Image (cartoon, rainbow, N blue to C red; front, side):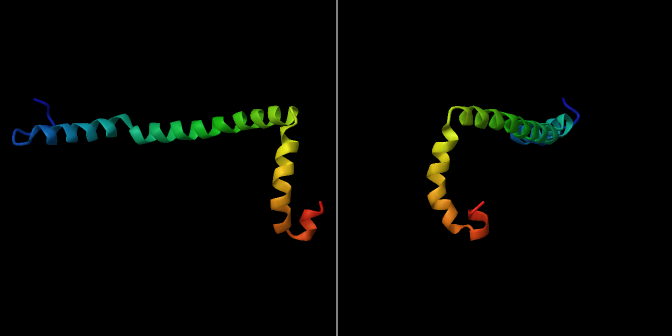
Length: 82
């Protein structure tokens, strides 16, 4: 019998209790936050390379032509002329 389990508990209570003990001992939240942080940091170089390739094949000119008519009218005139 495990030291955490008392004889009067049901199997479901034992499983839930043991799950929380395992999560705490393994520092699951620390591992999950580390994985999320690393994933977000790895997306930045991927986006930079993707935009560089996109620009090399002339894709930015097409996107700029689509965005310009809808975006520039809402900008102040000082920023729109630059």
